[in-house]
Image (tube, rainbow, N blue to C red; front, top):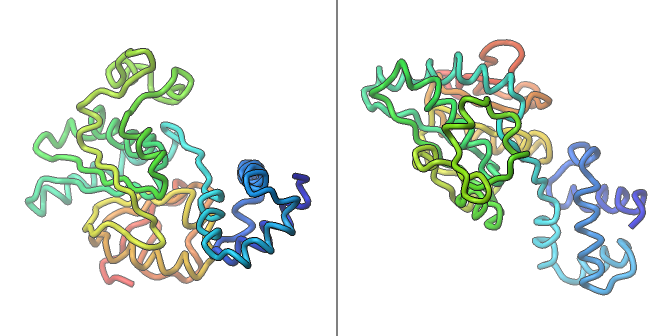
Length: 274
């Protein structure tokens, strides 16, 4: 499939899926390869024929939606953000949990893919933040719309190259060699994986921390962004934290959140609510 043909098709199809072309511009080749394979499976000559097929077979839109999921995931993606999480955010949330008297910091990783993000949070908590909060537990709910990725996350095994951003002292304690490198049980235990599409269902909460990075604010249309952000705000405790991608921004005038500090893409849930 030629790139101009795929671009034209995506600009036609994405708005019908409530997605935005701007988010796909740099990663479109991943999606275009999948669409080309799908055309071969269906015996279709080109994207114009696929448009006709979609109009005649509405159930195919769900398949196209799955083809448009971007699966870029790695440990400590945007390391500066996770350093801020360990130095400032998690200690603050742990103090709040202690003041509540329930002894649990509850997190949600949305669009967790193969689990690197929630497991990164578990590492930071275990090796850094929990030292000053020995009576407080961490619990992470991690959701994604792709069961195949979730199965990989639950297995918790990676190759050496996948761990290049993990601090070396942590890497030695966090992983065991069993052919590939397997995450130790004490880091897997706090994380629960669930099959959920954030557009249709969100975990109930309440949460101290929500990580919604490089998903909603990158790929979804603005009206859908606002709907999901307001539902996230309902599930965040007052003073809780929302972490977004470093290249993302909340829609203009969106209530409910205030920037924690300039720079790392972390927001507080306003006490007054949206």
